[in-house]
Structures are given as C-alpha cells and as structure tokens.
Image (cartoon, rainbow, N blue to C red; front, side):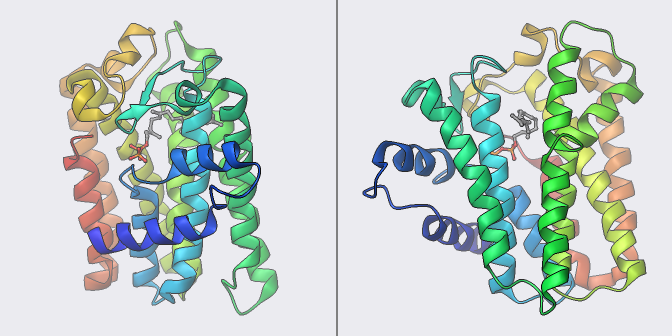
Length: 288
Ligand code: GRG
C-alpha cells in the first residue's frame, strides 16, 4: 500500500499545475487540496483491480490520478459553507479556510476538469473507442446520476427521517459510485472477461457501501484528531446515518455482512484478488 500511495503521490504531483505558474494562487490551492494527505483508497482499489486484470501500472497511475482528483474536488466543495461547512480536512484547514471561498470553488472546478483531461490524454486502452467509454464511465460516476446526485440527496435529507433503503440509495450514489468506478477503471486497463467484470462490479458496489457504513461508525465513535476532520458532525447536523437509523450494534453487523459479500464476490478470482481482499479488510479496520 505504501509503495502505491507514494507512486500515486508522485503521479499527482506531476499532473497538477506547478505552483509557480500563473494563476499561482489557484495552482497553489489545487496542490494544497490534493497533495500530502488522504488514504488514497480509490487509487489503491484501481491498482488492486488492475493487478487482477494484469494491467500496465503506467495506465493504472493515470486512472488512479483521475479518480483521486475527482475525490479531492468533491471534498473541497463538500467542505464549503454552502454544503457541509467544515474547517478541518486531512488534519489541516479546509481549502476555503486556508484560501477563500471563491478560490475553493475554482479549485474544485479545476480539479474536476483536470481529472477528465488526464483520463482523455493518457493512453489507457489500445482501442480509442474503449478509452472513450472509460471517460464516460467516470462522468457517470461523478455527475448527477452518481456522486453529485448523491450529494444533492444528502443535502435534502438533513433533519428528515430516512428509511434504510433511502439511506442506501443516497450512499450508493454519494460515496459508492466513485469507489465502484475506481475498481471498474482499474480493471478496464487490463483484461477481465465479462463474467469477471460482473463479479468485480458487484465487489465494487459492496465495497463502496461498506466504506460508508464504516465512515458513519467512525464519525460517531472516533475523535477529530484521529479522523483529521470534525468528528460527530452527522449527529450535530441531524443527518441520517447508518448509526442513527440502525444503532451502532446493527451498523457494525451491517459492515460485517457487506464485508462478507465483498469478499465472496472475489473468491472465484483466487490469489489474483488478494490485494482487493486486503483492501476490503483495510476499509473495515481503518481508524480514519
Ligand atoms: C460536492 C459534488 C460534491 C460531492 C461531495 C463524497 C462527497 C460528495 C462528500 C464527502 C463527504 C463525506 C465525508 C462523505 C463520506 C465518505 C467519504 C467520501 C469520506 C472521505 O473519503 P476518505 O476517507 O478521505 O477516502 P481521504 O481524506 O482519506 O481521501
């Protein structure tokens, strides 16, 4: 994990605009928002799925960067006063606190377009039409039918009682869609047969939801210093979560069930899915 995290860090450094190139403040803020923090779970998933598909690591670097840039943009925008209004992220002041709101808005915009530039410009597939499908896959995962749509549902849900099904629908979009796309993009850089793609996709969906259930548990139980972001925000903002709807015990059971389902989807791949299995364990065991 440490090797891939370092590799992705260098690749992100290379694809972000240099901080001494105009507009310098915007470029500095983009680098501030992306570099030197974060677990890089989505890049790790892309690499692990790519390893299973025997993909070229250089291609995996490209898709890993694209997904992480979208993720970083979403965090910058999510922290803005008009959304979650948070002052701490990855153990440091959020982008709009360190810079200003307008800059943070432009950072998110620029990271999003950079992500698609990176994905379109690198050579990911031998067939250009197939590469266009990958660009479109990331667009769907991050747009109104994916992450941004999930965020809209989330904002609308504050203070409202949601059923478990409604909560699941929200998180499949808000958090799950991008995690699923990381697995799909990594696998698409190599070769997996149709049956394998279906199984990997099932894994990606379960892993995405698992990530969110664990996130809800951590928000309720961990402290801000460990999380690197404000803890207890869901309850303070009266947001529906797996913990508030199911209680902490049932939320933990749900995490166990999702983990088992994710691991079961990997079983037929045998040892080639070992890294994906290890990452599943990491998603559950993480402390931030
Ligand atoms: C603003 C369009 C738009 C979308 C925002 C993903 C999201 C939607 C908001 C983030 C809010 C949040 C805390 C969601 C819970 C799950 C999540 C994405 C946690 C943060 O991801 P990690 O733990 O963060 O992978 P690091 O810092 O490790 O990269």
